[in-house]
Length: 372
Image (cartoon, rainbow, N blue to C red; front, side):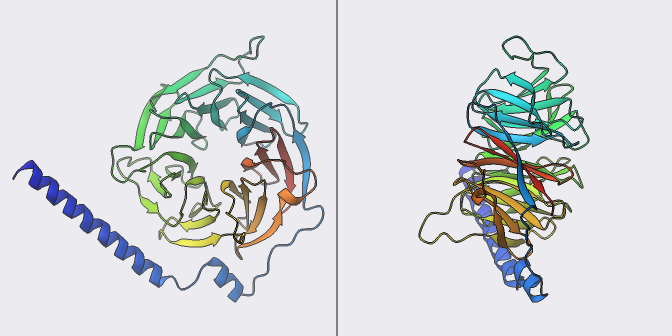
């Protein structure tokens, strides 16, 4: 059999597989007779309500001179790290608003940052295609520079997102513009596994977000500019466990639901969505109508500890608080006094769920108490 005939058979087989996948997807959709909100209403559920002191902006963290792109909390809740277009990482005391570290980065174009589980190190990545690790116990130079304790090099595109494996200070996962995610061994600086790339089940465009399952750290989900989210098992890098469709734009942010069985997404199409990792079904769409105007893009999301609330940041400065059961916006933090003046670029909830931190293109971060 000639090479041309083999290629033709391969193309025909691929078309058949894709056709069967589409038919299976359509059959699954036909079996979905309701969504989460429809079922919740049928059970008489009512929306979450807020009193005047339930969500209050506590502190404004000022110190960056450029757009804030990323933030992360320490597990003990009292510190925040932020990454900015000004080329610095700043570690904040969330209780006092004081800066404990201001690290000048080798590459100013930083896009992501993360705390290690023990809170002693921070990781960051950006347009230099590397993930840099800094030990916070190391002294900084007079100009604010701190020696890099480990450089993770191997991506062929920008590093868009990074997250430490929960309860492991020696492993983290990065996402990149080279269409892959990588699991790293920080001790050796080597790649343990590469997810995607040459494998057909991988993403077909830039991967821009990752979230590791807190209930099962072997599982993580990635979001991409190919409009999909994909579920991965770190033990099987050769193929994605599931691919989740539904969005009509870049999937900018992904975050696991507290129970680990579901995850949320936010997209350039202006919607957030909730998916079930066991069935592959889309459970709910969170979409606020904007009339004839183009819907603002969703940049970042986070769930409350109970999972009842979904916090979503948008490019127009809105920060909606969604009731996940009823798919209703119960509050817009962007409309409150002392809110941000620009795009909400990142947000995150403290480990105990008592505080929300938002970062913005207005160069500031704000912490808000959460009593729900």
